[in-house]
Length: 71
Image (cartoon, rainbow, N blue to C red; front, top):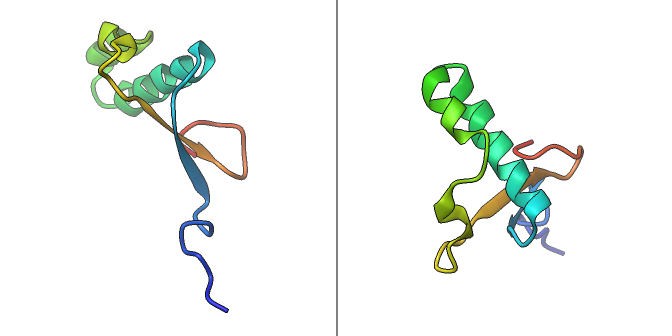
């Protein structure tokens, strides 16, 4: 029996469908930039206008082992 490598990944990737998920994405973006480019990171604390555009697809990566976005 073969293992499914996708199921074995320690994270999930899904489409953002709620304001709560969008806030998680914004927080993750902020954390990713805050250490190296803090001035730019401050602009990422909240969701961007493009994030709610109907033609935009925002993905959220979450750890399967914790409740934090990005692992």
